[in-house]
Length: 69
Image 1 (cartoon, helix red, strand yellow):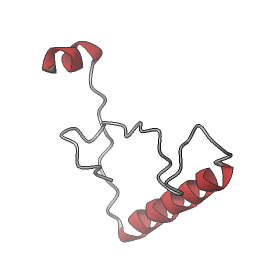
Image 2 (cartoon, rainbow, N blue to C red):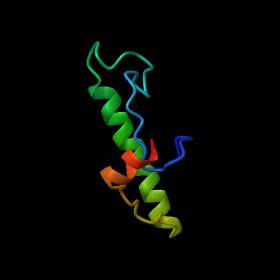
Image 3 (cartoon, rainbow, N blue to C red):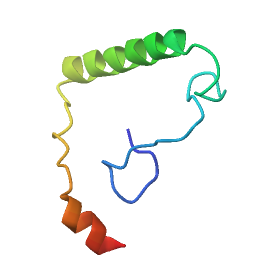
Image 4 (cartoon, rainbow, N blue to C red):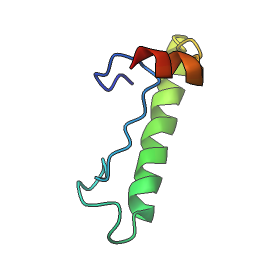
C-alpha cells in the first residue's frame, strides 16, 4: 500500500474519507470503516495465500523525522 509519498510509513491523514470522498468531520463513517477493514482483510488473505507477505514496516524515530525537515 504505497500512497506515493517518499516514506512508506507516512500516514495519509487527510480530512477526506477515502471510501466516500466526503469530509470525515461530517456524518457517520462506520460503513466506510467496515468497508476499509473488509478490503484490508481480503488483501491480507490474498497475500497470505500467495505467500508474499510484505516485510514489516519500520517506524521512523521522531528525531530522525525532525532532522529530515
